[in-house]
Every structure is written in C-alpha cells, then in structure tokens.
Image (cartoon, rainbow, N blue to C red; front, side, top):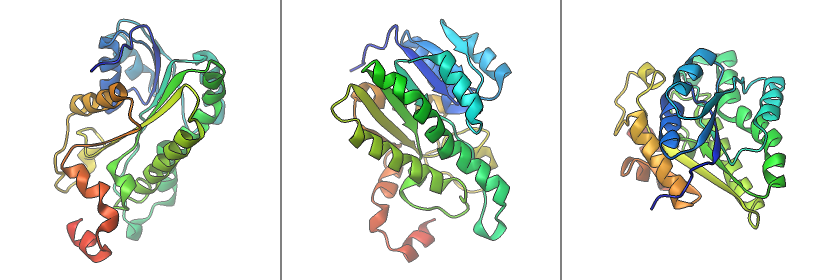
Length: 242
C-alpha cells in the first residue's frame, strides 16, 4: 500500500549518483518536491533537470559551515533522506588513516552534523520524517572494510536512539540497510557480491520501507538474513564465511 507523498518536500542528501539519484527519480514519480544535495553541483543539476520540481542545493557534509548554510536554505522539509555513502576497500594491514577518516566523516559524522542542525526546525513544525540509508555491514564487522562497517554500525545505533527519543512526537525515524548495490563504489570490489542490486531495485526497497511506516528494512533476502542473525555465528565460522 502506497503512502500519499504528493506535495511533500523531500531533502535528499547524497543525490548525485547511485541510490540517491534513483531515490530522487522514485520520489519525483510520487509527486514530491525535491531538494537535492551533494558536493557535485553539475551532477545534481543533471538529475534535477529530469524531475518535475527539484532544487539543487550543493553541500559538503564534512563542512559544518556548508551544512549550516544549506539548512538555512532548506528550511523545514517534510522529510530528510540521508543517502551518503563513501567506500574504498581497506584492510587493517593497509590502513590509510586519512582515507579511513574521510569515509567515517561521510558515512556517519556527516549525518550527525546535518541532523543536529536540521532536527530543531522539523521538531518545531511537529511533523516530518528522517530516513537514513545504512548497510547490512552495520550488523557485523567485515574484512577489508575499515572506515565503512564501523560508521554504518554507528549510523544504525544513532537511528535506534533517535527512534526512542522521538516516540510520542509526529517525527518518524526510519533506516534502510541494503546489501551490495551496483555503483562506482562496488565497482572497486574484486570479490563475489551475492544478490547485488541495481540502484533502482534498491530504491524500490527503500520506498517500501517509507510506505510501510516501519522503523527498519534489511534487504535483499535471503542475504540480509545472514547479517541479521550474524551475532549468533561464532567468529571463526564468520571469518570463513567472509
């Protein structure tokens, strides 16, 4: 069952490519007004040109001043969708400190900075929705994912805390945890990626979460089941599986 989103203003952060761009297309088809943010203004303008009603709002989530200026311009949207994802394969044996910190900045700290500045206006209007795009890797640390798994786990924990804190308000918190999505990021992997999805497939799953009103959606099944129950798998067996 679809939720009526027509006329709502959705601010999509991380909209310049991949899942974020696919979600812009999906929400545009549902009649939403869009605010599209990312660092790459030209890519955003190209996506906005394909939408019925979209505004380009460049922003760097690693820069508090950039976030503050964007929040001032965005006002109090009906929904804030954080779909920023930065990934480079990295083992602890080949740790690049600066590169790892950059990933943590985009995948978690950027969300923390943005929500902290955007939430007051959304609370003041007493309605709205926060949708975060996490990852199945949030459930268990993965090899070769220094800088990616840890901030995604932190993002899931943040969503759970906000869900508890905002109960009793009209502000809904949701998080989608996808598996592998075919993007320029996963193109960097040189290993098998079970049930890899196209961005449009993943966007459809996120839209199902939005329509359901539920807090969390982990996909695709059955690959997601492995991660959902991973805490029960002994470390030695997990290492062999991975």
